[in-house]
Image (cartoon, rainbow, N blue to C red):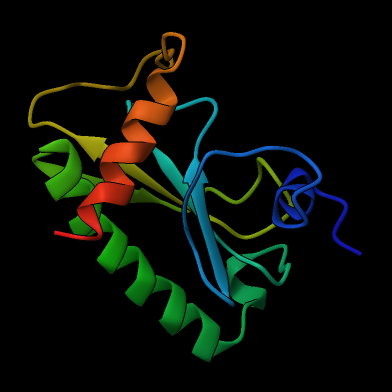
Amino acid sequence: MNDTIFGKIIRKEIPATTVYEDEQFLAFMDINPASKGHILLIPKEQYKWMQDVPDQLIAAIFIKAKELMLILKKALDADYIQLAVVGNEVPHFHIHLIPRMLGDNIHGPHVQYAEGEMQQYADKVIAAFDR
């Protein structure tokens, strides 16, 4: 039983602003973003560490991450999308996709969304799937 916050999001026990979902993966807005538009991509099956994930699933999640990078870059007019696999925030392997602008120097505190702004960013990303 996956009792992590991600497991609860997968089971829809707690809300998340979802931008992508299929049988294997879920992508949703990070509630503590490094930049506006920052999303998390997770496998629906729980693995604590990246090295625990079966090779086929690792390949598939990084292919999906690349697809989402292109969508985010287009949707948010970002210069590039930074990927991060930190691994210790939640014991469920996940990939951070962080929209970046050249020279943005986002090494400090996380950004905050204004009321309704997270959904506006999510809507931009979702709309970019159709372009």
